[in-house]
Image 1 (tube, rainbow, N blue to C red):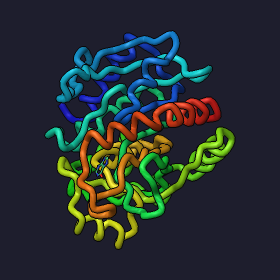
Image 2 (cartoon, protein in one colour; image 1 turned 90 degrees about the horizontal axis):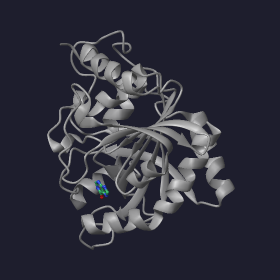
Image 3 (cartoon, rainbow, N blue to C red; image 1 turned 135 degrees about the horizontal axis):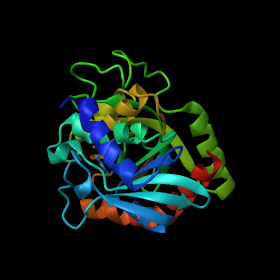
Length: 272
Ligand code: HPA
């Protein structure tokens, strides 16, 4: 089975359970999964029931697709995502994005937790991704190209949709939420970066670093899905404060700003 067939079969099954045409796709990162539970009239499909869908490795997080309404807007939400560092290959990490495209989703909002390497950021800063650096050493578009998804050499000049980013900033302003924008640099993980790697990241123009989102952006642009990416800066990146990094700090910050983050996403979704 080629990649298109693999995605098509998954999409066919999901289509038999729900109708996601013209929905906004939502990929909820660390600490934001809760938003999925606030979707009204939800139809829920467990990843485990979807043919060809990868298995989630995080215990206690089954992983599920939720289709319903956020305020008055139809959304298709991935509660739980697949990471490269879990041992998935890049195509697998990007597969849900392609499945969403096949389901007729009209745009995609990707969220994540990230380390801040821009020294003017603080833990809790929300950052619109306006460009990215693929430092993951791999690419979901590697290998034979299937034109049914998109072109062999996709353009990435406006990978993150500039109009949607403007809209997002207006929404933040309306809500009185301070947001920034910047360049997201994707590392393979699973270790947090070294201080030397962070100096390198700063030198080449990164504002935030993380271990997700890059494969999804690449797959989305390839298949012509408009994308917004928002990072929650959960910690300053390695070496900046001298403190050691911990997953606990990442979770605590994500938890502290999640109400704001959720409010922002609700507003953006209702304006798209
Ligand atoms: N580095 C990489 N990924 C992350 C970080 C970080 O500092 N914080 C949250 N996710």
